[in-house]
Image 1 (cartoon, rainbow, N blue to C red):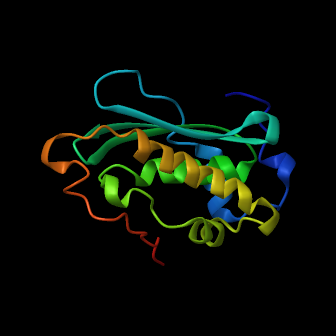
Image 2 (image 1 turned 120 degrees about the horizontal axis):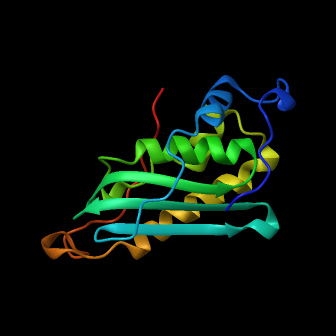
Image 3 (image 1 turned 180 degrees about the vertical axis):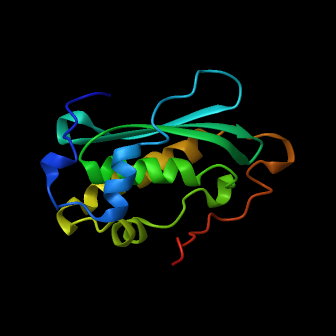
Length: 152
């Protein structure tokens, strides 16, 4: 997933501080190499303007390391990067750090781009769907998934 990346200067004042900071750094961009304990989830299509892929290294029901790849606007990349940074330590049953509405508020995402956050959420759900069951922490031991808010 590659494509032209607009410079932050070209975007003027259209990005919030949180979005600008995460977009400039993209601290968790990339992919983890294939191997035991690596789970990948993706959603969207480049042809429609947004595609997101998460690579997670997991140990039983917990994320150890996370990376993302994305094609989309600066808001999409910023939110995906922030989420990848928030995933280590999270459990499979509570993977998502908040909801798309939480992310939209935190990153001041315009309402017309809200659908892109749903693509990010779908990529996280795809990770959960592809996460291998391991021993006593399999489906019978997990309760229903719970949503967690980002907090202040």
